[in-house]
Length: 431
Ligand code: LLP
Image (tube, rainbow, N blue to C red; front, side):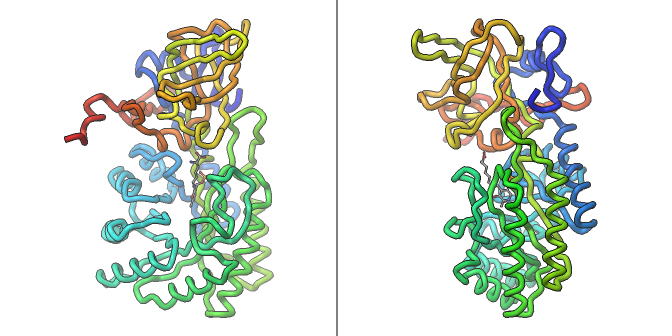
């Protein structure tokens, strides 16, 4: 099976985290997001251990909440000793209301409003990742009003292509994030931060992309960042204390995908960073990274019920389910690949189907050309694997469909972490 938390019992019924997927669908209804709590925790521990071994105790993995954010997720992150990368007031509020400590939140985002800045300052968010000079100025002014010095990292763009899909490629010079090093603008940006009275420059941030499999991308990024850090020392006498290298390790969605050995990659990166620091006579900076997808993706599975099966002779077959681009827009947006399994049975004669959703447009496809039992019919349950990242967090109410619940699986038990969005809730904001 694609990941070790997926199996079938002797009757061919699908199991996730050891639990019967169809029984869970009967109990909680569909569409349904399932999440394997043990897997989330294992992934956190994998990062924690790899970081401790590679960088010592000061280094910290920050969970990028954009991958999947709800209160219980932040409770787990708090218990696992993770930091958090948040990109909006909504994410910060969710984390704080779950008891996650503000001091362990790094506030990202390229479009922070004045209201966002004030909110985060008032809540005592640990660190701002400042995306550009206007934000720096606004933050300096707001921090000044409060008589504090706010700790910040500055987001810079190293100018690197991580060889991933366009929508998540964030390292190149011309992207909308951060301030480019190559044009000289990043140098000015750092100068401005060093002069800002109410800002305490803690270091630098960069994030070059998501779904990165290329094994040298982080090392190449570190080379560029260290070259820039040397420039900062020469120009301003400033020694970078913290270097945040962003998120991005890829995960396996289909059998053909590689399995990234993240602890090995982190160990290799640490060695590379130590060599860079030694060569430049820098103290080793505190290293932060912000994994999102690789913490939660393989902890998720989505379960649907088939509504109809259309066989168009000489053309194609469609299996239409009770969810779609509303709960998983990733094929529509990125042509993302997924592994699709029939939850009730395996084996026997098969046929190829497009797994389509119930939204009113032909592009509403969860995954094209999937192989399922030829006799797939209304009422059958279908599972889509590895949906823990960027599914729930990107879900919409298109066609006024309510978002599915998130049910957590833990040690043979299940509990609702996010309720199903009902009809009244869909109208809750309508006057
Ligand atoms: N840090 C920053 C600044 C980011 O922008 C991101 C992701 C991460 C960390 C986490 O990256 P990860 O470890 O999850 O790759 N919706 C897209 C993914 C967008 C990623 C945006 N930034 C998708 O569904 O593939």
